[in-house]
Length: 426
Ligand code: ATP
Ligand code: MG
Figure 1 (tube, rainbow, N blue to C red):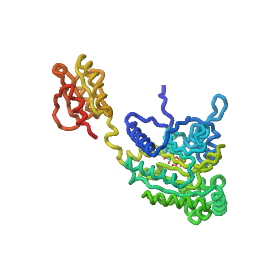
Figure 2: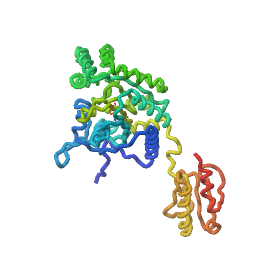
Figure 3: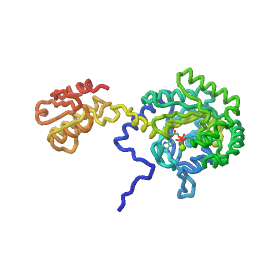
Figure 4: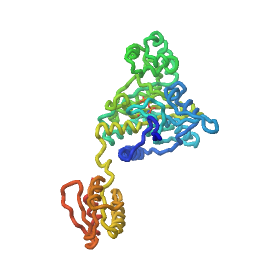
């Protein structure tokens, strides 16, 4: 019988890969704590209408990428394609937004039926951050300062660049949209097929078309800048001034519009040039209208989401995963004979108590001394702690360095924890 395989575009994350995931997740988690962000966990499935009403009916996500199905009651449900909508729904439902400010974050799988390729999957993982109740440009800047610090912590600061733009209020965009459609309508037949379709549905999205012909036509198109409202203009100037003051570099990309309808004013993307076409590792912006659009009181909001697969791919491509991340063991305990096995069990427990941040792996399953030492070597441990008849008799252990050329030594059992604590630095 044919074996059942995973669904295309949905990846298993294997034991060899999880250490780098844990490293990235832990780095982000610590950093968010430093800034006072609180975690929120939402269901993976929501009512389909939530996404239609927030992301927008005529976006790529809602038109062609959602995993939507009827459950047994006949309700239309959707596997979440992103986290913002569910976060707003949950925050609103539980009164988290009433008369207060919130800094929230979440992580987990998202689902989009896209064409799988490097950096683009059908199940992928995001860490998302959403801030509510803050109108000013200072929180926009905080999100960018925070992400800049994260790239530094991950060693990616030299491999990411920030693009920002303002897309104004919905009124400003409506006026601009009219002008853009009038202009592009004259060249309808010269636009690429997607852009022709978007002319009717979501013309702003044409601005980030990659098609060379369309780009040539866009060069003379009216600019959103000419239609921008004063408030958005002032807000954007302040965001830029705050970034300058904080020493975060950026470039303004007037074509940056973002593919979801709920954004307004500030939008941004962190991009890397080392991953080819799937170069956006983090994207977000302000969405002051969304809470109200979903039935809540008007609440200013701004957030971003980063794609964990792309960040990890980037770390691996650039060989920036710190060496210690992949090590599964620091100490490997080898024991020969039943008595030694019994003693090794409590010895290993003592080591774990004394060295709480280290991995102490006990050999289990017996085998010759040679095969146990081979496993010790393969574990990546720095030291093997060996208990045999002699050591039992003498109340000692043999300690063998596995990574450097030092000699094996014999130590009293009572000294081994302190000795290892001293030897295992970094
Ligand atoms: P793209 O333009 O690459 O399709 P997007 O604008 O659809 O991205 P967002 O909805 O803003 O992406 O999601 C935020 C981040 O999540 C992206 O910048 C990216 O890092 C990641 N991401 C989005 N879609 C996928 C996917 N299908 N596979 C892997 N990561 C993804
Ligand atoms: Mg997309």
